Image 1 (spheres, rainbow, N blue to C red):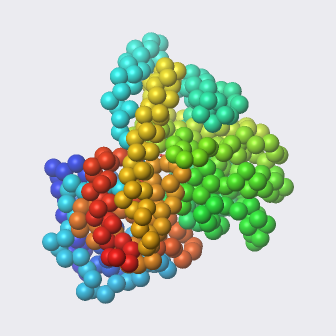
Image 2: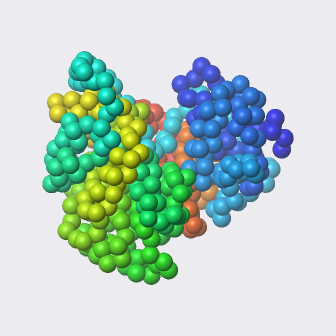
Image 3: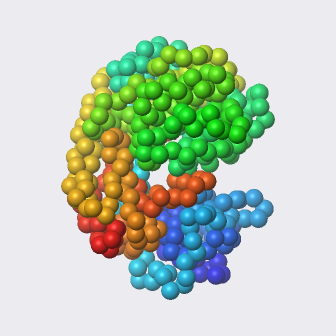
Amino acid sequence: MSEAELPIELDRSGPASLAAQVASQLRVAILNGVLQPEHTLPSTRRLAVELSVSRGVVVRAFEQLSGEGFLEGNGAGGTKVAVRPDMHPRPAQVRQPSSARPKADVIDLTPGRPSGSPFQDRQWRSSWKLAVAEEGKVQLPPALGTWALREAVADHLAVSRGLAIDADGVIITAGTSDALQLIVAMLRTRVARPNILVEDPGYPTARRVMTAAGARINTVPVDENGLRASQLADLKSTPDAVLVTPSHQYPLGGRMAVQERIGLLHWAGHHNVLVLEDDYDSEFRHSRMPLPAVASLPGTADVVLLGTFSKNLSPWLRCGYLVVRGNAGQRIKATREALDTPVAGVLQSAIAHYIKGGGLSRHVTRARREYSHRRSLLIDRLGHRKDLELSALDGGLHAVVHFKAPEATEVAAKALAQGVLVVPLAAYYADRQAENGLVLGYGAVSDLQLSKALAILSGLMGSGA
Ligand SMILES: Cc1ncc(COP(=O)(O)O)c(C=O)c1O
């Protein structure tokens, strides 16, 4: 296919960003075989000219798809469609007809997008007023974060996660991606290419970010209960660090039992492996009480808890935190001091005012109610179907629906043609044969939009389809 034939049409007046439109249309073209594995895409510069958008728009779309595992390589050989065992080239006759292109008013069920409501909150606005009114702020913000926000985070975690820490154990980050880069930079002060073990399936962005920062990624398969500590004993080599989502495995939703957590700590302490606990959405429990954070359990292993404001406030803020302890904690702090912080002081002040004034916990309570309601809607619409299996429902802002047929990639392509954007489970797998299913993010849609989307998806999934 020539570059000029790339199936991209942009709606410049629609609500979806240009980068999201480019990414979603390329994703569909890959999923339905219009773009075949190993097809080389035009350079970002050239595609930007063809589409009359800035190069940044195309770069963001390519990065998104690389993170999801649909594209690979951006060196001299150019960016190519990835070859993956779970993505089979499809014959030309199942290509999406051009009349079935996605509409601009797409209902986006991509996971990781929370409810946008903190921005309408009066206290949120007054926290910003207080932050901008602070006088005498002429210096750089401290590398580890402002003391006010570190203290506010420690207090918040004491209540929300039962973590007994003080402000000194908290480092403010620009979210999980920044935290992972910082940790890889710290590991690289001792090992040129640190080895990091991640869950499979897992968070594609983490794999991408840590690889870009210079780490080597190895994977360990997980099941509906998350990582099993017993699997770690069989690893061929010992990693420098292991990244886990014990509270709500991403994306399958399993939660590691306490004895598994203790087993993980025991193994990590014995082999001197740094444990990275990604605690991304543990505040949103729907049916069961949260288990204690791995970082709160006793043991000799160094554990770092990665927290983010992307889920309980908004990814637009680009802010999060690390809870550190032990020797690794000292080394992460030293690396952050050397690299300096990317987090704006005024943003830190505003979030600190919001947390201290009780705004964050009120917002989390409101959002939890909203998510819980949408989760019930999902169970109500899909839970009775014998040919579908729902998982990841205990907490968070997404669910997974598993089915035998038809292939999830086909369902996603057909759903998009009807205005619903969903991500196949396959996008989260790295080294294993993917299970057939879809990940449904319900954080940022209204109840009405979710109902509409589920009605469409219900007709496309499972044996009744
Ligand atoms: C597993 C997981 N961890 C962390 C995050 C948050 O990342 P960040 O703080 O970089 O926005 C997400 C967001 O989608 C996620 O899915």
